[in-house]
Image 1: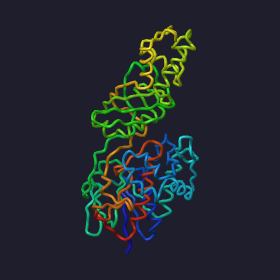
Image 2: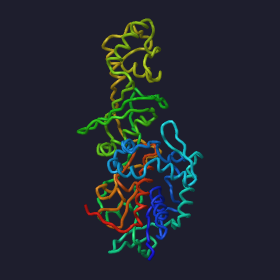
Image 3: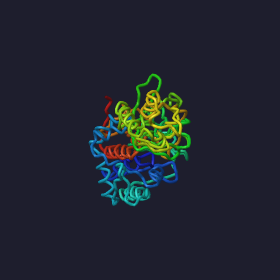
Length: 414
């Protein structure tokens, strides 16, 4: 008797799971159901249309450190299928990936259509039936499987089911109806809105390495180091995006009001910096402070920070008092800025929240609550920082689910 497997969700995890299932169990009839007319929407637009497939981090213990939520659960999963396996999978299916200086990996074509077409071809070759424009509204558990009720009416019986609907209210509703706990989804990966005279007129100014600390009432301080970009609305860049991911839930709970502490010169500790500035005061005593910046920050930022502590354009290094010197050190190493809201980011469709990880067996991605149900991708309470990590968790969980979907039914109630 043919085993009927349905995959709800035509994104990265859904396609990868459907392909893995059909390739591993050729006797199974695998049907992928996608509500939109065109599948793989996020794959198409990710990475500015280039598709950041994964990250060149090939050690699972290091890879998991890039997941604010889900890292612990993914540790074992990545030992079974990690970034190296993703690269090999696409290579085997005719797509070469390249690594950029920050570790992000893209198809050599720099075109997300390469990845979309690869997945579509692999699904077709494996015998997956892809049905678009099918919105499943309800799933009813049966003793030996599930009945799917699409919006268009009727019902379809399937033996096994993979939910890979991403951060989607319908998917969460189906998971809840089958007994799962769903943590409310909130945005992850976003920029910070802040209005401060120290940053006015600096839009476009980038600093290669800053140290950021996020202070939230009653919460531990969250810290990230990386590059920062000043924008018209506040600050962005890798350091800010990582901080937003790690602080996503707490920032949401505080209505995106928090204090951001910026160390513009993390390579120098305050005492080293003091000695450096005192040496400059002695050696360049006749030079103006504003025109002679002794630290590795952009000139325009230096001008703003010196003005903020009361240094005038014509003031010379010989004239700076110890008090003003201390204030300048304070500004350079621990200036405080008030976050007033959440900005936008092109990959802001990443959320934290979803099906509680305790409900899922990460060896197979089968539900511990509902036998025959598997979950993969962003429907789970997993999210990574920017750089290909979110796609990697989708490939891994989809692959594990697909490899298990056609096997003999097992149920772990532990």
